[in-house]
Length: 119
Figure 1 (cartoon, rainbow, N blue to C red):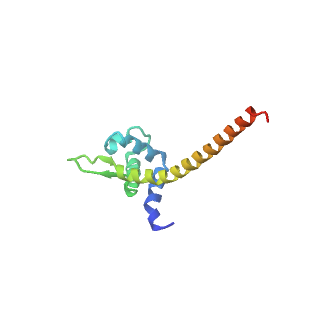
Figure 2: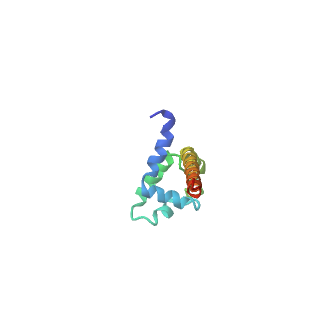
Figure 3: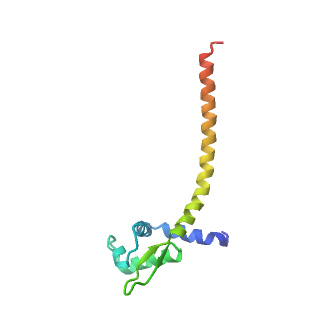
């Protein structure tokens, strides 16, 4: 593992947990406090805070201060970086499948011509 992969590894490890993925999904609708994020879970607020810390360390979320509130925000730039990494592999595979589709269509067309030609 190279040091260039460390941020990517920490982000994917953070997203491996279903509670953290749920937190990310909730934050996609807008910022929320720890109390708001903890509502749907049958775990303590302290446990939710620890999950948020993991997400912060992976740079997937940030916190700001708004008087007494400390809302948690999604870091869309970090998610975009993950999406870009995934897309590079998706695009390669799509190109391979397009090539395979082309070969299959050519063979089907050739097969259709042979069936029509009684020679």
